[in-house]
Structure formats: C-alpha cells, structure tokens
Length: 181
Length: 181
DNA sequence: TGGACCATGTAAAAGGTTACATGATTGA
DNA sequence: TCAATCATGTAACCTTTTACATGGTCCA
Image (cartoon, rainbow over all chains, first blue to last red; front, side, top):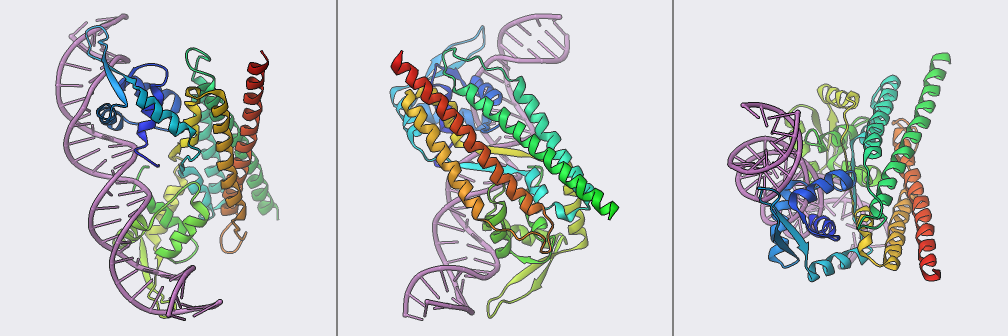
C-alpha cells in the first residue's frame, strides 16, 4: 500500500475520540478484521512514531490500577486522515487460498473437485456466521459507515454462498452425466 | 498462509505441463493476479528450492538462442499438490483500502463521503473491465476451473458495483433530505 | 487461588515488493 | 538501429506475523 499502511487504521480509529493501543486492536479484531488486519507488533511501534511526528498525543488514563495510555488525534493528525480519505487512490490486495485451489482443481478427480467446492462454501459460511454476530450500534458518536461496511461483508458472503451453490449443482450434473453416459 | 505460500502457485502452474519461471509469472499476472499475486523475487528462488527437494525437475528448452529452463512436476511434487488441494483448510486475507476508507467516512462531510463511494465504484469498474478482457480458452489441456474462477471475479465485481449504486442512491437521498429539511 | 482479561511492548522470522543487473532475440 | 519482449536472477528493503515477556486486575 502507498504508505506504512497501519498508520491510517490508527488515525481512523481515533477519529471519534481517544483510544489505547489495546482498544485499537480490539476495534480492528471486531470490525475491520475481515478486510484489514493489524497486530500488536504493528500498532504499538506505530503509535510511538505517530506521536513523535506530532500526529497524535498521549493521555495517561489508568483504568483501575493498570497503566493505560490513550492517544488523541492532533490537528495535523486529523488533517492527514482527511487528506487520505479524500484521495481516490485505494489499494486492493486479496490472497484467497480457496480460489487458488479452485483454479487448479482440474488436477483432482471430479469427486474431489466437488468436495473442494463444498469445503470452500463451508469456510465462507463460517465467516458469514461470525459477521452476523457482530453488533455495531448505529449512530453513537460515529455515523452509519461502520454498519454499512459490515453489511457489505455480510451481503458479499451471502453472494459467495449462492455462487458456490450454483457451481455445486453444475458439477453434480456433470458428474451424473458422466456416470449415465 | 500455512506454508511458503508461493510453493503451491508453482506446483499448480505446472500441473498440466512444464513451464519456465517467466511463463509462471505470465500465468500469475494474467489469471490469478486478482486473488493471488507472485513476483519474480519469490518465483525464481522457490523454483530452486523445489528442485532441491525433488518436487520439480529442470528441462533445458532454449527458445531460439535464449536459454530457458522449464520445470516439470515429479511424482512427489504432484503428490504434494494433490494433498494440498484435498485439504479443506484455506487461508483468506484481504487488504481493501477502499473499504477501510468507507469505514472511517464519518470523518468527512457528507458530500466528500459520497465522492468516496463514487471513487470506490470507479476503481472496481476498472478492475471489472480488466477481468472482462482476459480470455481463457476452455478445455485445452486444462479443465473448466480457470474459467470458473474468472467468472467468479467478474460476477463478484458486478455485484460490488450494484452494491455501490444502491449506497450512492441512499447517500444522495440523505443529502437531499438534509438540504430540504 | 487461579483463570480470564486488561495492557504494553519487543525480537526474530517469514513473507513479499521493488529495483537493479544482465543479456539475447524479434520485428518494425 | 531501436524498442519491446524473452529470460533469469539477486539484494535491499519493507511489512506483517508469531512468539515471547511482563505485570496488573477482576471475579468466581
């Protein structure tokens, strides 16, 4: 991606109020994981760099007896976030091992290829079930967009499952013809 | 992914006959790029390792005066490919900067958010146009699966564009209500 | 008391891209 | 002759994951 891509996950996560590294990680795991992941190994070092650059500032906010540092966007941090959002360029990268297997499925006997399609569908169904369990309160400080993106995920996976079902039928018919013919 | 993930792109690419590193790269760029990319920096070193492990073997096949080394699957290489294809586990990783921007779009004024959706749609339209230009001969040594996966890509992008159009309408209506109200 | 969770961080390894280097051939 | 393409490869860099380390708190 154009630039140290974890930067914008962090700046974006802070758009409606301060958050700690831990809270950013929770947000990512809950809400953006299916289209954008981030690990502690990225988040904490990047928070330090963003602070050094004056894009965010630290607030000591212990929770009970635990130390906790929340970060808040500075004016220039918000500026950077908004400039990025206005820029129409947006990278898109997919690594889908299921599609890769499907692409090479002619190396299998038809029965195994059909099983591959069914496994592909099961995996997508499992993701769909997870997405359906996510609850994002509409409004509540943020606008409608997190909910809109969640719907995208759900509707996309519903579409994929329909696509798999069509393919399954087609392969079942082909197999049946081979047996009959 | 589970293991040196470029391994299976290579083994899969060789399933219907020998190919050189250059030809594998061409195949990837033409046909799997939208769901699985690979660079020369991955392909050539991996070819050497796979050869050392006895999973592929080298054939000297100069083209004109140019040296060219094609690789062929060995029996154990084909075994490894088939075992991988039969394994239902399949990683799925997406990094979609457009969705990330959409997720944070409540940091923009409504007009800019609408523009973001339009830009998102334009980018997907551009990908769709590229996919539509890809021609994969059905049959021809390989089975129907490469074509099936291409259809997936095309139909998916058509679905995304319809989704964007619905969202655009919704945001346009909201904006109109705000002006009217 | 012990397990789940809150909270912050680092180090090593793995995975991947980009840029560069080299040189031949084909065809306009 | 010049550009495009064929063909192979490496080195440096960047990103990301994984595993580890540390320690506090809450609650059953």
